Length: 376
Image (tube, rainbow, N blue to C red; front, side, top):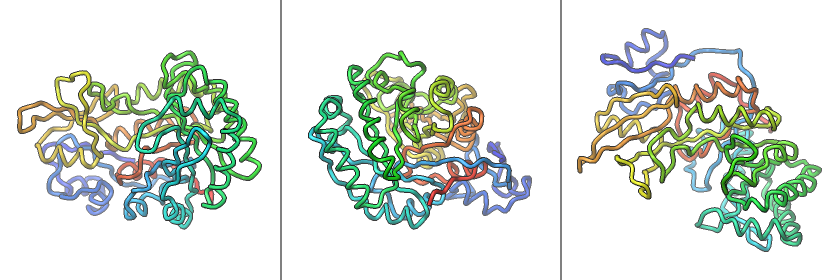
């Protein structure tokens, strides 16, 4: 794999000539809407053949609202398509979603569709009380499990992903028992079981997001564990990389000690943020796609920089009100740096949040380093 960082005076023609590849391969592989306008500091993926590649699992979360063209372009790069999400109710019933067409498209592309359940209220965020109600009621759990099985059968799902977040620390053991009960119910039926968990550095890490997620128990009970290694840079926090490679590696160093490494799917964000400076607590950054970040950089004539510690690109600019902004996003360099951790820690694969925006470099780099496992 070759990644070229654009220098002053570079053009697609000279980069293609120097790397002995067709110009159109660079244009297509990097989604260059205007090949005549390269950005100094921009990272370009240069396609090349590399056959020594390990096969990995690749999961992509999607909302039902994904555009059909984006879904069609993404499916060849996925093992699983996890459709987000069936929200649960305290009595164990489920709130339906419009997933039929996505399941059909996934299976036609040999991608395994995964049902996702979450302790969320429809249109709202994660609710600790909602999880607690289910985890402490045998009747609600039994009803929920039966509803899940009925849905997976009727909709032709391949398996289940449980995304329970902000679970009360006091419900940690109840959550473990629930996972065990789900596994015993669906595994004999041939369904895969996956969980999504917070990025922890130790079992004793304090915080509502972390304490109820028992890495060792999840590693023992389920088929795949998705570690959500993103959101260090987040909507209401200060400007920094969304998924800094150094922080991701710290999480993995702990995780592989207590979870079988081949069960781990490392989380990868497919978005960036635009912060207004100076950062003021309580103010919100604007989310944008990686392509949107590049388009913004071109529009404001920004020079893209790269942080060697966080292994991520960023740039600064001033808006029409003379307010300074800082934008962090992903490019071929940052993607390759984190994907290299899959081999370093012998992980099972990767999971993208979300695939609703198509970023070709994300998958071209992935494809250059690994083969995508297909189960259908």
